[in-house]
Structures are given as structure tokens and as C-alpha cells.
Length: 154
Image (cartoon, rainbow, N blue to C red; front, side):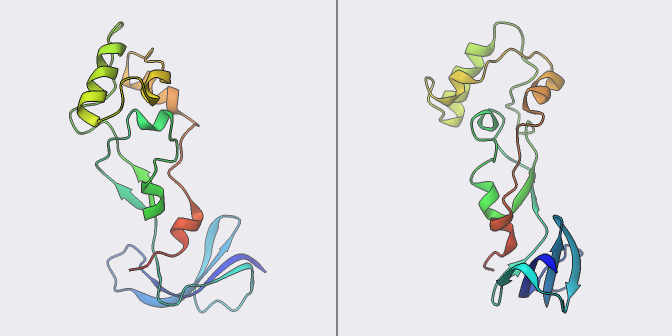
């Protein structure tokens, strides 16, 4: 018995091939079957009229600060986004010179519409290099929500 079977979905596999109707079998968090899945699942989803696709990559986000208070990168996760790229829009949080944290927090308030006394006040702002910034987030973030990815209306 599989952990999860998604039945009758339109499967978009990410290769560029046209979508096709298929079942998807999942075991231990991994897709183990695509096509006509004979096994039952502990959980079975009827995905008729829905699309199953690999997680999407969002190449342009503004989550640099938000990830500290919203590690799921909401609302991207409810749209099937499982990977994000940050720090590439010309306004990022690193590198950061000592003492510039307050200036950057105020700039985020102005540019991104984050309240100056809001969530950004708890960030800390003590990194200097981009590597140190990433280390602060390491193991604390995840833009993954299996229920949102399981089936998305086209």
C-alpha cells in the first residue's frame, strides 16, 4: 500500500510534453509511480479536473526579510512554489555593513511596504556577508506545502 495516490489528474511533468491523464503514487515522500497506479493509498485523492505538476521555482521574489517571520514564504506555497530565488532584484539584505541594519530596515519599510515597527524589528540584522545571512536562515525555511501542491486547478 502506498502512502498517497492521486487519481485521474492531468499530469504536467516539466519536460515540455503535453499534459496527460494519470495517477501518481507517493511513498515515503517520493513519487514512485506515474500512470495507471493499481495500488491503493493510505490517503487517496480524486484529482479529476485538477493538475499535478512538479514544484515551481519563483525566480524573482522579495522574501529576503519576510523569511525571518514567514519561513513558508506565504503565499507562494499555496501556488505550488517549492523553490524561490532571493536577493536578485537589486535590493537585498546582504552584504550588510556593521551599523547599517537600522537604515536597511527603514529602507525595507519604504520600498517593500513593511512597517518600520513591524515584523522586521525582530530580524536582528547582525550578519555582514551574504553567507552569514544565509546561515541565519539555514534550516529555518521551507516553501513547501504538500496539500497545496497535490492538485492545483488549471
